[in-house]
Length: 314
Image (cartoon, rainbow, N blue to C red; front, side, top):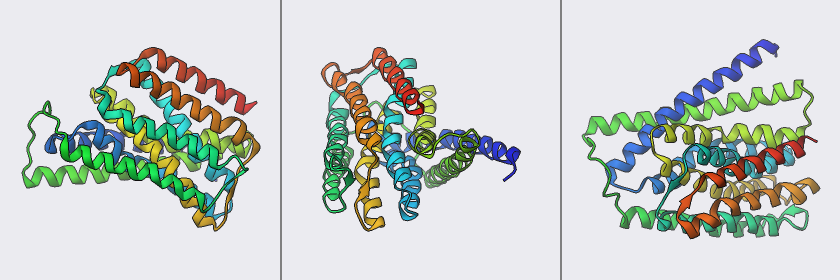
């Protein structure tokens, strides 16, 4: 492919994902306000499922083609990028407080999911049968979201129009926003990988850094847009929910698709998994005790992620 076209498509993907994210967050906020559902719950369910589509599609395609390093690196690397880079940058710009009841259980489930995945893979592979144990945290997180959506109403939500035309318009916006995010992410992944290859970056690094960041761009754009619109709880719910889906759904499904256990590289076990778990602990544990997500956490997360990326390149 012509080098200029690669860069043009890369920029086109960036534009698609930025505009799609803007439309997507608007529609998601309307859903939360229309039904008086806490924005964290909307972020942890509807938004998370949509923004994890790139990770799921990329990993499934990689697993079906026998590219196990890409499938595993994308899933774990995306979680690491979500926490260390996206949440970290978000907290640097906009630290915030949140009722513990809205994030404690899901935060613990996210950390537990990463730890369980790490333990399951200590033998050097992701077991096809035992990997189904990861569905347990996903089921609990889904149940908690449904319970919260049913029992907890956001009484501070401003009244919004709920006539059939407004509903139809927001459904269309939600679909268009999702399509823009997914299409833009795919353009960024494909052409970003080609650019990385042109620069001589190894495939393993492409998977855990470039592709992982590429598939995490929907969460990044959602975070940036949510901060701009002062909807940080929506973005936090999105990141935690997306991470739970990434860890508990993508790799077990990839293992089933491949028809066997997914082998892991020594680097994944010695560095990628521990770093991912460590960042999750930094993001969640202090906030459970304080009820706040603070700027110092953002600084530690960003610095740690950048150090991890540099060591990975080395």
